[in-house]
Length: 285
Length: 285
Image 1 (cartoon, each protein chain N blue to C red):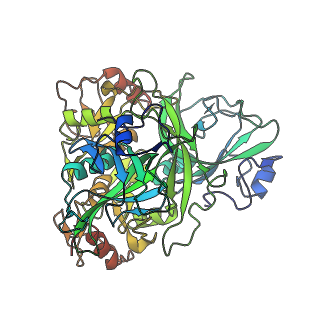
Image 2 (cartoon, chains in turn blue, green):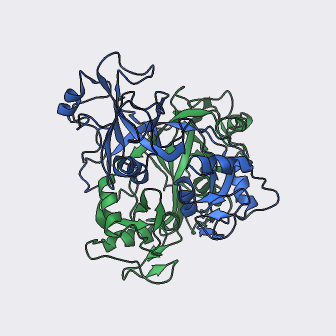
Image 3 (cartoon, rainbow over the protein chains, first blue to last red):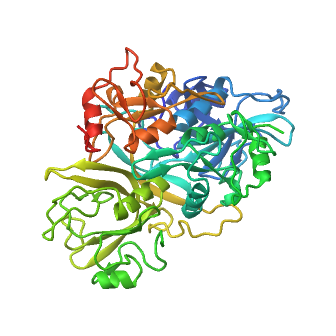
């Protein structure tokens, strides 16, 4: 696997066809949309119109996993997080950036007029597996553009520096969702910084530590609201579990992925519709 | 507390004196360096040359806590994470941005020539309490500049938007340390993604999840190396504990803050000097 940007190739570089992309080392396969290894990570993805579930907001892309289609690009089966789909999921869990290429056949106003365009490095901010209008489960990935502030180009040295001595620094730019920190602190206060799943309270120098987790995620395509009814007070471990399909809350607050019920306090009124949304993006009732 | 930027006041705004800063609402006290409330957070800090331990790298500032000085600004006692010092620590734990003001008397090439200059919002990336050359423990804070990409000004709407409907978005810029993701994945593989402290292994959709934690932190002023000998494989909860003064490793791998010893595997050779450094920045042995 060759992660990160390719020396001498800047974001915006144009390629006539898949062979040219292949030869440049940008996307090292002639057919598939994802180049990656199952439990390691994906080095590049191509958007080329093969999946109706792709959504493109320029600096945020909702990318669709691989598979489950017939030879007319109709979805006829569920996708699973195996093979290349699991590879791209590892980018999220390991924070590995992925090269993104847009092709002319990708249905978006951000597509090139012809051929393919390398559009730089993106981070895989979130993954989920959702039932789409066509009736099948699809692996989806929220990709966010990363730009090197100093050069205006993609991060060029990510993962490619010498490790001895101080680590090099760079200016990263990223699309950030503004969230209400006061609100988050207030919700944590209500629970005394105890995790609503396991009851743990982390004590560090200067007080307690917990995280305010959004049930329905902020940002496109989920667009969850930043309100107390959409927040949980969780320890970091259960925040990771909740965001990554290992923990669910039923309508009656019963937990799946942990014994017992979600702990609640009277003044924290959580909207059950957000639990339903959270379950739905993992293909559950 | 009024966190975030002040409407109508951009980074770079000049103020003749402390009274003018006060009147503008930028720093609402006439004497102290930190405006904050102990268990809530700090809204602003001023750099004005009172502490020899301040270090200024422009977009990264190592700020010194309050107290322990005599009337000639000589350090004569240890500082503790109480009062205003604890307030600024909460900014780190709650991810609350802090307004930064540089005064002409601050010894740095980034100081204004006269009076005071508001230099925008910074995040408090890390805190620790370290014994300095003068022999006393000092609370220290690594502050990193945040800039709104769209305007080139500090984030103007952090924490001040309506919460219903989709959360607003902004482009944040930040000073980022490049770390080696391959190396991090390799270290986690060696430990089978089990936490070296508690042995837990988080299982999420698509595999296991753990974090590679630097023992001696990356970046100024610590400048730890990005090598396996300086990494631990930790669960998110123990990563927070380790980075925030609640967990230490002795030379013989005995843990303080958890029962037992750090779990090790033969091929992961950890340099004891990094444990010593980590303990030293918390004023231990």
